[in-house]
Amino acid sequence: MRLSSLQFLRAIAAWMVVFHHYNQVFFNWDMSNSIIGAEVGDFFRFYGKLGVDIFFVISGFIMYFSLNKRPTTSRDFLINRIVRVIPVYWFYTILLLILTLFSVVDMESQFTASSLFKSLLFIPHDNPSEKLGLYPFLTVGWTLNFEMFFYVTLALMLAVLKNKAVLGTFVLLLGLPVFWSELNLGAWGFSSVLTSSYLYEFAIGLGLGFIYCKENSYIKNNNFLSLILICAGLFFMTIYGQGGSEYKYISVALVVAGTLCLKDSLFDNKLGQFLCYLGNISYSTYLVHTIILYTLVHYFGTTDTSEPLQESLILGIYLSGIFISSKFSYEILETGRLNNQFRIILSFLFLNKSANSSSRSC
Image (cartoon, rainbow, N blue to C red):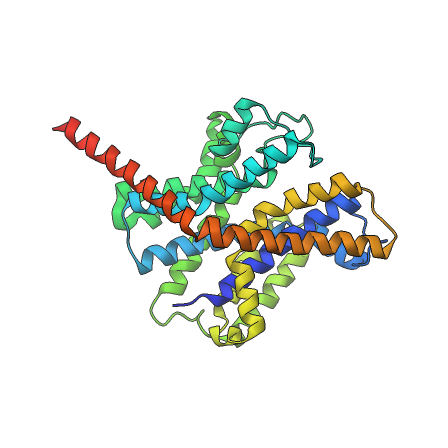
């Protein structure tokens, strides 16, 4: 079963973040002199970061949908998630390291041997740059700390609770931020994940997956309901933008639910297929865009320009560079031969470990 609508939403979420950072870095949140315009700039300033929240909800949904469609073991689930996340993230982290060593990018993010090690292993830590706080070397990788925590939690639940794993994960994600905060348990940098309300968004995604996968679910193939839900989501999004932070969860849940209602036939055309392809490569888009952005900063500076031709050049390089790089890493790192080799190696290591454990227990 295709989920073209969800790929479409992934594309939107990724490019919301792309333009959010473009506004931040090149214009310092003031795009009044930009060819894009102040109104569009303000939209991406206040709402572009919601692309991350949408990604988290989608992630929760996809995990439920995948496990409901094809139950798997804890081991296979974790291997699939590692293969999906690590190769591209490590590639772009190492690429950023090389570009930094050769002074090709101008980023505030810094590294030490220890912080680089923690970045690669998704361990939350203070960036050596005093200005950033809890960010890995490739700064957008902070979201992967949450993603990997979600995946590891779900894998452990699969090992312990079997067919009740999703329910156990759902309850844990809802209760953990309050529980951990109240007990003040610490846990080094991991407390930034364990106490975060971002965990609620994975739970929302699991809940939407439960509703969607029910027989005769009402959030399937219903364009009229889709319109209602998306409009309601956008309404609550405006309230969030005016300071109602608690409405963020309602808005992203409604937008994702509304998108799921769309009929796949809407995407059976060249434009729809292109938008879905942008969704396919959205993970690479998310990871690569800041590297391209700060490379451009190195050559063009960070101040906004009132010269339309110069900004058009910068924007053209930025967008085309992101698309070409994303296409490359999707077809080679995410789905190509290198990815398959990485999967084979991981499977071998996991199997060896299991075999060794079995022999010791005997």
